[in-house]
Length: 256
Image (tube, rainbow, N blue to C red):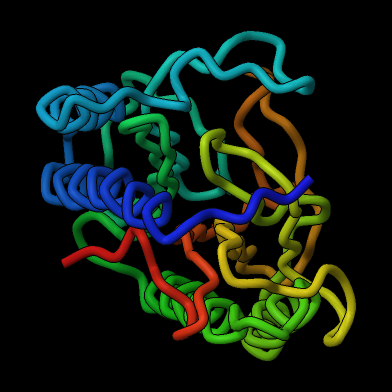
């Protein structure tokens, strides 16, 4: 069931989304060659704590997961697409890292992700990340009343495929509100004019995931959480929480 949020609820979600935005900004600023993923998780915990927020990631255990998630960020490096568990791995020159983060504040949740490189960036990685950001922007632009979920999916998928990139099978965005994952699902590829019609008050997380090689297949790492590309190629992940309003899409996790 899709819950329609009031303007007051969307404003409250914006406050949660801004905690997420500040967290991602702080994590990106702290990320450097030699810094461990666990250290980045500690940075995120500090921002959440200061804001009086908690993490919807920490302890989360969906049906596919063998264990509860042990961190407040997902940190996915190089060939990891999403859901990377922060470890003692220290970032190396040229690493591509995707950070996914959520915050719960006042009973409402925000969720967002960024991809960036550490040290000297490979031109191919820069193009991959830029395309992921364009796909996210295209999906957001399609998130207007009267459109359908398929219009968002088509907008994202068109940017990804035109760029020559793969779209991981079976993963995409989702509804969001009092819980991190709500109805409806928001695929990263699809046919325009299909699916649930968008209405003011809906809130969704739009999150393109791209694989550099153009292939779509992936596998779960032994930790049961991290999804990796089958061919070892690099991946990028971007995400924003977006409210559908009469005035157009409102990005609740915008970074200032």
